[in-house]
Image (cartoon, rainbow over all chains, first blue to last red; front, side):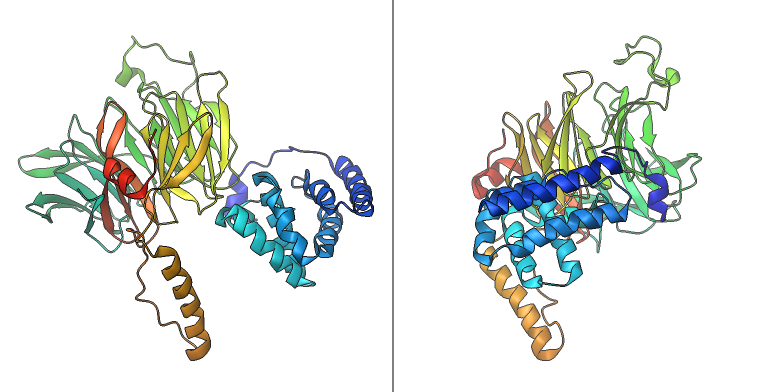
Length: 138
Length: 342
């Protein structure tokens, strides 16, 4: 714990771990469903919705990120740009957080760099700044 | 008329403030002193050096009506300076805080001032002389009732009733990082703030509790804000160029106010490429003498009005880590860079 953590109020906002767990299993089902119907765009929207940023349980974040990162990794490079085009500012911020998480894993990096390039182009430097400065991690 | 005037007065400027008729500027060149410059002909000359603080001066405010200067420093003290017999006389203000004082500001009637301890980064007075807003490194913005019987007297109506001194009336948590800047609008009906996660927000006090609009900025975070009009805000920060945010059915990023010299984009792209090429080829970076195409050459930390009439700012000045003081002329800037203040 650093000095800053002492001073920042940690409120219990957001959902409980149990709620997040059920979110994650729903997310997994819906992402698979959208992919089976050949709608990766819909799958992306489901994947980015309501990330578990408030939980302190690493296992929940891991489980959730695995689903999202698998989806992002499965995109073809040529589809990335059009997918990013349709996202709003809030979704772009969330996506950039997952992209950094994906790059931290260090596998399949080429596709994550492609995501990074496209999000940066649409959302600007602000998206990177928010990944670095926000404590609400995915 | 050119769109701006630039003067290089120090290596790095931590704070600056103007006197009432704008003939003098007080600035801190990143040390324990405050230098007062006076304009002689076309150049600025040091007139006084105020050296009473022990550590870096963090904030300066010059009261236009009573001509008193207020300074705060990392040495945990504040001074009120009064001009008498050709000299600035300091009066120490006991703040009784155990960390550095980061920001001080005269209230509109110049009869009291606000300060906060380390975790609060900026303070700003409501034009009614009673409400005080603070922005903090705990990611929050708070609004306080700063009624002091001795200074305000008994015959005032407090806007939110009898609120205990030191109890926040409102608390805003739209930011997810340090809140660097905040300002009340000229009328006091809205409060703008910006934070280190490149977030900008405006709280509208027409309703109780206030409604807050949040804007995710494309660029780097803003360090300071200035209402040019009730519906236009200039923001400065790590992008080295002031940006304009306007309110047309909602607050939105409008444009850059300094677009750099004409071939800005191209020059930047090649130089970034060159920088890496040099690193690869020679194992070193050779472009350290590179100039940015913007007027400021480093992060801009302060923006204050230079000329304003009835809440409309026609000229403003900025200073930052590059040691430049730049006076910007809004009308000429609008024409040059094709943006619109509303």
